[in-house]
Length: 311
Image 1 (cartoon, rainbow, N blue to C red):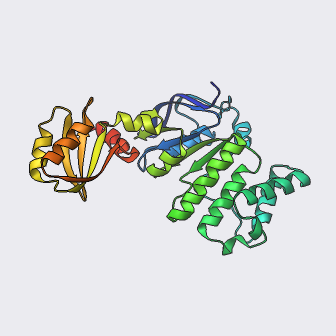
Image 2: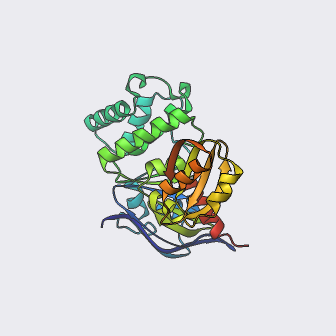
Image 3: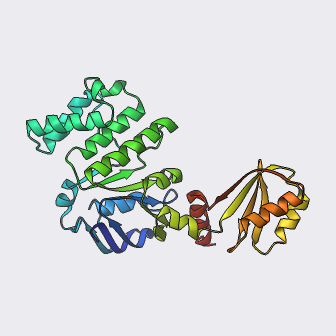
């Protein structure tokens, strides 16, 4: 398999603080990979190590087949990065912002013009290209910042919390744009986020870190499955304490609880869903809807942090 990023036992200390602790990761080329973790987990330090902006204390790194410490300039010239600053010049128009960066990347006039139009059209900003960026909403500025990152067609881009501070519709639109543009261009995205529903929608694989240590890596589905039992959500009337007691005594049931407007049953494998529903009906429940689900990525994330919490 072709990997955009490989790290082996990557470690970075700041004095007595270990920010990244023996991190071993493989990020396949051409997919969106999410690095998840609470504040202070080491996400930003990891990106800085991958871009060669910080030397590791120990361990190995390969980014696009290169060592960022020895070949930092070459690595950074083949990557795009949107970290804490957008890199936009607020007094310039959208078009002039991109033209400035395209010149920095030494793109010729024809390529610049074609690429700027392609990106602005793709992000729905072409009609507003002459407007000064200072007048734009936060969401539009963020789209333009992503266009800036994609400008020179880098095979790998780093995005640090790309939708932070955006309202729900704007963040959703930006995610759609990212998915479409990466699919079209075959770009690998290394993404850090606190937003777990975002990671679930965007990422083919996620890694969870805490205190610089890798807790788990896999697809969102794998992490959710690992996090616990499937559960049954039952909506209806007459879901009373008696029904609860009867359910709890069943061999296929791991636990039962009331949640707002429904009953949630944690299932052990194999559990007969139909038999449990029949049992509830026999107890006088009027059932309107039954849904089977697994843990959400958020629940999986929290249970991973809990399991690995050092007291």
